[in-house]
Amino acid sequence: MIWNEEFETLPREALEALQLKRLKNLVERVYAAVPYYRKKMEEAGVRPGDIRELKDLRRLPFTTKEDLRLNYPFGLFAVPFEKVVRIHASSGTTGKPTVVGYTKSDIDSWAELMARTLSCGGAHKGDIVHNAYGYGLFTGGLGAHYGAERLGAAVIPISGGNSKRQIMIMQDFGSTVLMCTPSYALNLADVMKDMNVDPKTLKLRVGLFGAEPWSEKMREEIEKRLNISAIDIFGLSEVMGPGVASECIEEKHGLHVFEDFFIPEIINPETGEPLPPGERGELVFTTLTKEAFPVIRYRTKDLSRLIPEPCRCGRTFYRMERITGRTDDMLIIRGVNVFPSQIEHVLMSIEGVEPHYQIIVDREGALDIVEVQVEVSEEIFSDEVKVLETLARRIEREIKDLLGISCKIKLVEPKTIQRSEGKAKRVIDNRKL
Amino acid sequence: MKVEQISIFLENKSGRLAEVAAVLAGAGINIRALSLADTTDFGILRLIVNDTGKAKQILKDNGFTVGRTEVIAVEVPDRPGGLAHILGVMKDQGINVEYMYAFVQRSGGNAVIIFRFDEIEKAIAALQKAGVVILKGEEVYAL
Image (spheres, one colour):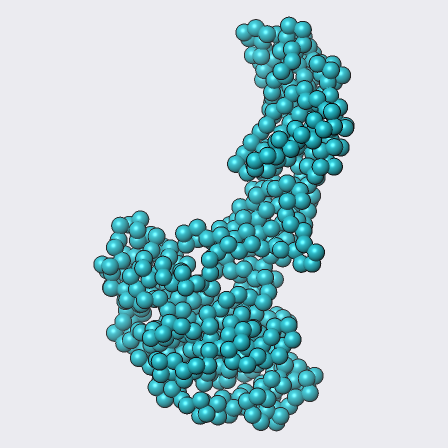
């Protein structure tokens, strides 16, 4: 079912007219209210009046995570603070989180978008939505929650963790819709198996999964093991949170971007040039309606392409292909964003450890397993086993303390980690995503 | 009183031990005694050779991580209670044995055991006081 027939099936021409109207308004608002954006636009030689048609969007400068960091925490808010009713944050790359804000109207739009998302995935009024996204600073929990309420479903705000209890509640309350990360869905399947719970005896019908990259193969596994239909949903806190794009249950091929709220672009990540629909590149979003924290041409660093062909579900919004990678080397380990440079930082802080390391990521069952290989230099080598093992445990503990992820340190012989001419190959990701 | 031992870091993969042996053989170095400590991920090979300096250099040149440690070579009477006596001395002094391994060659009628102690000077004093024979480096390399 289509939640908002009027907007979700707008003919392209009407949709683009609406986008242009909203874009002009956005640029004017931001130019007037956010000195940082105004300065960037002035440097780029563009004024709000220069936006006359949709393709003028490309004249506007990009916004990056670095811009957000420089304006931590509230520097890019575009409304007086008393209009802000909600603040969320996501993990940052260097300690400080990325902070986003919402007005009452933003929260209202977000609920609409998540109601659309749930509808897109086949949920409806009367469903019991088991919301296992984390509640808190993370946008997943509350974003999904408001959407499910807007839809008219009954929400179980169970949040993450305590899988046995989750399964008991699924059985007793009769949950019909599951919302969580795809890896947590597989974890629930594992725990069900341990508890001898047959998914066929549950009322679960559909799952909406997002917040981390996953694959077609993983979808098959989730669908088979939980006996449900699995839908890929997409969002990021900088743009809104969940509710930016969603697969429809009819096709399960590409995620409809809610284009009356967001303009997606695909650019060449090296040159910044916009690419024509269909070509693969970096995904960029502009928020059209957001009041508290609008973004103009925000570079997601996610790689995708747009599918302009009409979809049989009837929605006229372009679809974005499932995210296939990143333009940077960020890894998502059990939902935690990890940059190799952070691991390097830990290694370098330990005397005698040389900067030759490699990170190997695998998936065992539903869990991401990280091994960090470290070359043993003469300085850290010892004839005693316990000295080397203590060192390995110490590195593991420091990585855990700093990044919040468990990993295994494997000591290897010198020169066994490949040296490359240019950029070292720091990461081997064996997960089948 | 002390004997120089070299230690080599080895990953647990086939052929590495053979490579160490081949490198030493190629340089005409004779292995007098050895022990291999292994964990799930790596091993530490400890060797007493006839020419420590040369062995260390040639292994380093071949890309191995090599360490040098001082150990003690002790003559142990080849009869029941021989080893127990020596370990008893250490226990009384509160000296910890990090590891030990036996020599293939005998010294006269006695076995030779290599000890790595946490407190080497204290161990030497205690052993001498107890009348245990400690072999000199040159004696050990030439056994």
